[in-house]
View (tube, rainbow, N blue to C red):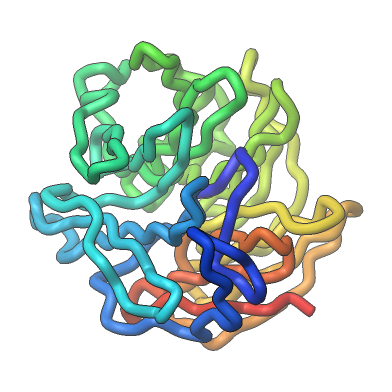
Length: 282
């Protein structure tokens, strides 16, 4: 998952609902396979919890309050992963479909599996653009087959951008962010490579590599990128020149990261540990 819009986070000194919270928790525990984190326009931190992999109906979206406690927001999903916001709705990639969630936590199917050109295998990350289109990655079989990136219009129509048939480098697309109106940045879970993808033609340009099991992808201050490595529990920094530096390791499985409003604090879901961490970048 990543965020293509301005975000508001429960961070130091931020006013939300008339209250100023002096501190943020450093870690939240007790989550059920947390996969993605998003700071919504209402100032709340949303986390997708997969529950048990392959067990339909036990997935949920939770809200992390300013005191670090979890509050359930939406329930009854299968394996919810990437999150994004478009308009007044929250969207989530849920196994083989994309769901649309209202402010009351009730959801509907925005794009069913049958709307895709081929049956999705592992819908993973989401990002939205200014026009209201949703982009979603399908990581395929996690071994290099069946991966794809799709664009979903506001009315739920799905169009293929690229897949392994169009370009053999497309193995297991995962984290997505917008890179201007006509391009996406995407990190591949199988190859650990970061690509720039042309939305119109699906052309790939390699930006950087060495991210192991590339998962989350976000942009921080001054155009710096941050990439998480799920397989090896690491978070990397990518400079504007494409130089890759290890920022933090030691997580069990660093999943789909999010960025605080200050552009300096990364929210890291550690899936296997069942935790959400606040990671300062300076």
